[in-house]
Image (cartoon, rainbow, N blue to C red):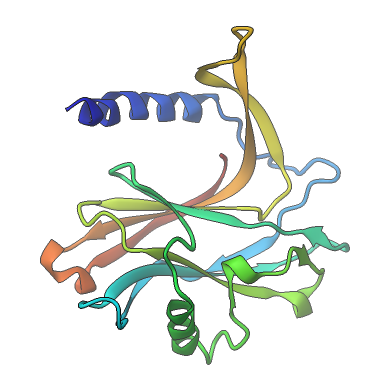
Length: 212
């Protein structure tokens, strides 16, 4: 009961405080700031049968296509997470085996012949269209009771910001500093019978850049 109360009252309050305090990404990038050009496939699912599991395992994924439009190499350390409206947060790559990526790669071979797994991409993104990178971002199945999910993809820009934590204090009683990164947010609604998960309807609600 205490855990449920915490989720119901405390977590939304903290998230709301962060949202109201967080700065917006710059409309005009400051000198030295860059943001990659990004295209993406909408969230979709795939089932994988493994020897260890009696029933097929379900995974969700997106494919992002990233191009460095600057004239220089940029440091590239993408991080992705999925958050449900039931407050479940899942980092990309969790419990994802190589077989899952291979099945996704096979499914999209024609369009993305050089598809790479998020965890294996090079940490230097070279400039130009010829160095465009296609990346598979994969998550294990999430809470079946979720009605919506958000995907957060950071590392696509070097823009950062610092704000005060709305609750946490350091030993001196001052607000703990929180470092935010310019992040791409993709939003989806999830609908359908829980017993027919494979036929779940996924509705794209939009995308935006946020500081997170």
